[in-house]
Amino acid sequence: MKSIGTYAFSGVTAVALVALGTSASAQVETVSIPTVKCPLQTMTGAESVKAPATVSARVSKPYAGQISYYTVGYVGAFGPRGWHCSGQAGSSGIVLLAGPNKAPTLVNPGQIALQAALYSGDTSGRFSVLETGAPLFANLRALVKKVTATFGQPIQHSQPIPGQKVTPVSANVASFVDPPKVQGAAAASGGGYTAWGVATELWPKSGAGSDPVIPDLRVFSIAVPASQSGLAQTLVALNGGSP
Image (cartoon, rainbow, N blue to C red; front, side):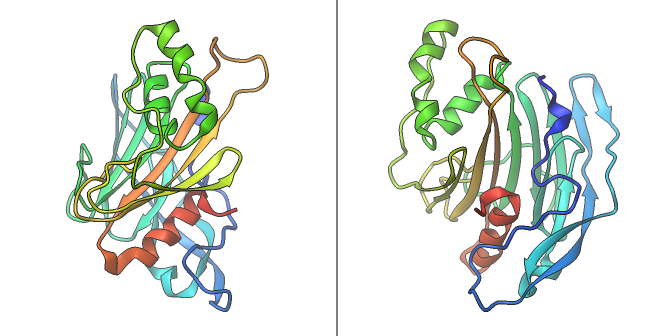
């Protein structure tokens, strides 16, 4: 996998992102967020996870005590405090999963859970990059025909998904909302809960990579009850969905 260790959702250094879903007058403060090291299973067995005890983040005061930073070392994400987590690494990328009752091994539609994934555009992960990212990014939709012709595998979902709400954050970042019953980019979407998320394209340096050049794709998503929508939007911002 291409330099996979250089990526993290918000890194394990200090971040400075103002949370979505808060008013301009809401007090935002820099706080230390506790880190949770999640068991990581790779194709060759379990791998130890190294991470600092805390990371720093700027969070609106009501949510400061409700967030933890979950990490498998290569990939990490801010999520609700007190959840259980695990990680899986394979040829297509790395996935971190977390849920309130036990660490999920797979996130299904309608589940209260989060998923943070890094899909590699240089490996079999290219199909996950396009199937998840093409509905969100026009530049990925433009690659679909070329990738299909080159690798002979059709992309199942390449157009904007009806009902999914996509908001560009920057040229290579988009946040999204999958309402109940809408199967969108969020891993747990399609069930009875709204799911929120953010996707980031990680393009290689000019001239690097295979032809066609496909970026890595970093995706965070979370599905929770409506009563936790403010926390979910805050987490989207902390995980890259804030301009």
